Image 1 (cartoon, one colour):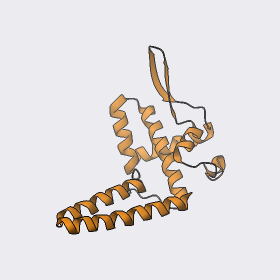
Image 2: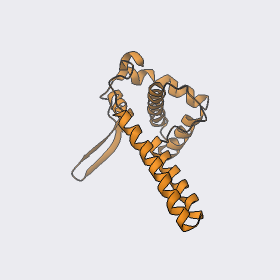
Image 3: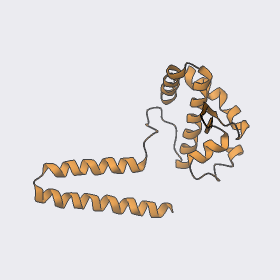
Image 4: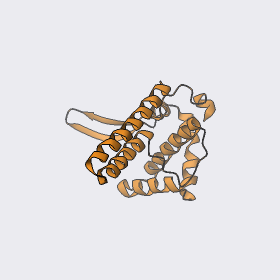
Length: 161
């Protein structure tokens, strides 16, 4: 994987990697004709070939985030290979995120949350806590919480750029 992608150096986000590997979804439609959606396969076939067996193994040994995706997609369209391809794509995205963040795979971790969603969630909690106080204290604490969160969010965005 690392040899084919040069250590993920050329990719800014996971969607670029997914497109490079050919796992991006294309739709066949023209005018009134609406065809089926499928993966493009225009990307790197070596990576798709390498991810084939790991997808079988994570489903066979029921590794947590992958088995849920497999079962959900299998119930939806009842095509096993299509479900395995969805698992392959998820493996690819998780490998990329783990490599970029220098982390180890954890089966209990929720891989679909982002830092921006956590900030929004924490600001909602701060607002709810502040709303429980009286109105003058609520306005002061809400202003304090949002100022801290906005400044930390802005500084993190500046560091990324």
